[in-house]
Image (spheres, rainbow, N blue to C red):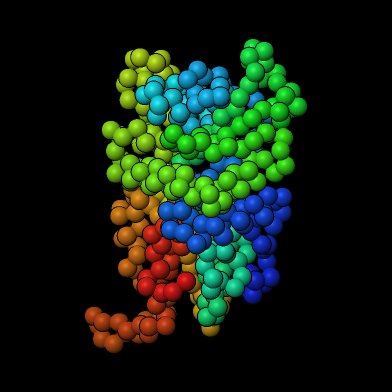
Length: 382
């Protein structure tokens, strides 16, 4: 891992977020739409975009198909990212296990970073450049503010919830799902299940820029705004159930990091004994404790190294996420939020029991948590 260089500080390293993805224009349209709306709309849009991006990384999606009766008509195939058929849980209170579809390892981390950075780049008008770096470099991203601040960033982001896909498959093709050809899969009608009565139509799998274009077209049309508001209201209810750890609310199990299902899932529906719905590794936003520890360490390290290498520059550090640590912030983040640090050489001994340090030599373990909702900015304008 290389150190902080003048090339990084000057913005000569890295690339524009999502520049290499063919669906970038679709993502941009959704983000600009969300920008004009509430923080909940923005965080909801992130989760939608992540669900679309997940399916885009999975080859041969038919290997993760499963037939269920009683799905919303006319659909009969479920494809999801947690070990649960969510539509049947919410509509029938039925706990049906289905192995989650997993995005390709090594791809999703890079993709998540670029998506959240594109949100930051579009939503925060005063960032004049946003560079995605990652790889072997010490820093994930560099933001340059209009007022001259340079913000070195560590990214830890993860959706609150993912939205499963539903497909309509003819009866004669249902006998061997894994043997469906690419052409057969491409001809299937599809939708996104939005954790409620309203679906998001996606058209045929082989349509141009599926699923990004049809999803974004639908969400951004004014005529659909009343339905989209219902989607967002549901998302807010999921967030509340997640934050409060309310296992009495079925929406708790729709959120990531929901753990094991209740006993009825095993007793009545044959849920596999050692399988969870989703584990703590999928905690929303910045809420995974390992991510918090690594993130604060890395931000602290960036603060130390940048202050040594470029003491005259106005350099800040930040954690970037879609959401704050709703469950673990008080225990793992708050204790560090009011802390200052300084190099030992910056302290001047006034007397035996008292040291003096100039204000400009005092630094933070991290300066900001930049998020789509509940950002922590110490009252500074970003």
